[in-house]
Length: 335
Ligand SMILES: *[C@@H]1O[C@H](CO)[C@@H](O)[C@H](O)[C@H]1NC(C)=O
Ligand SMILES: *[C@@H]1O[C@H](CO)[C@@H](O)[C@H](O)[C@H]1NC(C)=O
Ligand SMILES: *[C@@H]1O[C@H](CO)[C@@H](O)[C@H](O)[C@H]1NC(C)=O
Ligand SMILES: *[C@@H]1O[C@H](CO)[C@@H](O)[C@H](O)[C@H]1NC(C)=O
Ligand SMILES: *[C@@H]1O[C@H](CO)[C@@H](O)[C@H](O)[C@H]1NC(C)=O
Image 1 (cartoon, helix red, strand yellow):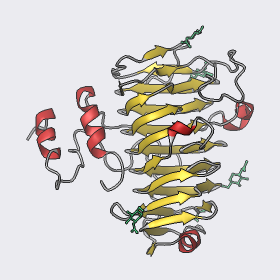
Image 2 (cartoon, protein in one colour):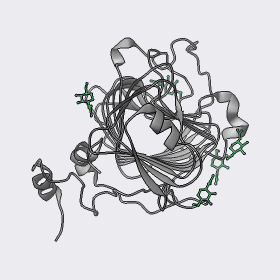
Image 3 (cartoon, protein in one colour):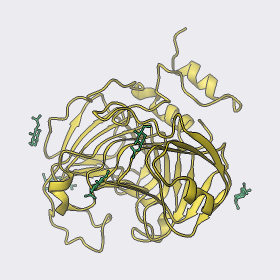
C-alpha cells in the first residue's frame, strides 16, 4: 500500500491511533549523527537494568555512574539542584506523566545517553539540558517550555551543546514559549576546542513561539531537516564563526522573522546585554539541500559552504507533509 498525505491525515485524525507516522515518511528510531558516527550508535541503557523513579533523590541517584541502565520517570519532580547523567543511560518518561522543573540536567564528560519523553519546564538560572564534552546523545520526543514574555534573559537555553560535544541527534521535540532555544558552541573563544566537533542532527522538531537559536551554531556541523517553525519571532537558524549548516525540508510559518542567517552579527534580540550591534563574529556557512518552505521569513546566506550532503542515510519527509507530520509526532506521549 502506498501512503500519501490524505491517508496519513485520515490515520492521525483518529485520537486513539498512535501518531507514529508510517516509516516511509519519517524515522521514529534514532537517526542522524547519534546513530551514524565513528564511535558507534547511541544505545543509552540498552541491555542494562530498568528502574522506575518518581522523586528527585532517586532520579539523581539512579542516573549516576557509567553502568548501562534504563531509568523510567513518572510524576512531577522538582529538582532542587542540577542532576548529572552518567554514560550508558536511557532516561525515559512514562506516558505523559514525567515532568521536571526547578533545576535542569547536565551531561558532562560522558557518552551514550538517551533522553526521551520528558516535559522540562521553567528551569531556573541555567539550561534545561546542557551537553558538555559529551558524545553520542539522543534527545527525542521531549517538551521544553517556560515563558517568553519575561524577555531573553529570564531563562537560559533549552538544549545547549558545548565544549567539543559530538554526534548528537535532537528529534521530535516540542520547544515552545521560550526565548533562547538551542545554542551550539557557546563562546567564540573556544574555536580550537570546538572545531572539528559539534556534529548535530536536528529533525522533526516543532518550535512554536520562540525567540532565537533554533539552533545557533559555532564551529560545528549541523544537519537541520524537516523541522517546523511557527512564530519564531526573531531569528531561527544562525550559522556563525565558521559553522557549517545543511538546511533542508524545513517549514517556516506565522510570524517567523528570519529563517536563516550566516551573518556574524549576534542580534540584540538574542543577547541584549553583550551586543554592540556590529558584526561581532566571523560569518558562518550554509548549504540548502532539499527545498525549504520559508513562508514569509527572510534568509541571509552570506557564504555558501561545503556541507552539501549528510554523511548518512535518512528518511526525508516530503515538504508538503512536514507540517502535519511534525505536529502529529512531536512532543511527549507519542513514543
Ligand atoms: C558504557 O558501556 C560500555 C558497554 O556497555 C562499556 O564498555 C563502558 O565501559 C561503559 N562506560 C563508559 C563510561 O563508557
Ligand atoms: C503534576 O502536576 C500537574 C499540575 O499541577 C497535575 O495536574 C498532575 O496531576 C500532576 N501529576 C502527578 C502524577 O501527580
Ligand atoms: C572530556 O571528557 C573526557 C572523558 O570523556 C575527559 O577525559 C576530558 O578531560 C574532558 N575534557 C575536558 C576539556 O573537560
Ligand atoms: C545580511 O548580511 C549582510 C552581510 O553580507 C549584512 O550587511 C546585512 O545587514 C544582513 N541583513 C540582515 C537583515 O541582517
Ligand atoms: C569546507 O570549508 C571550510 C571553510 O572554508 C574549510 O575550512 C574546510 O577545509 C572545507 N572542507 C572541505 C572538506 O573542503
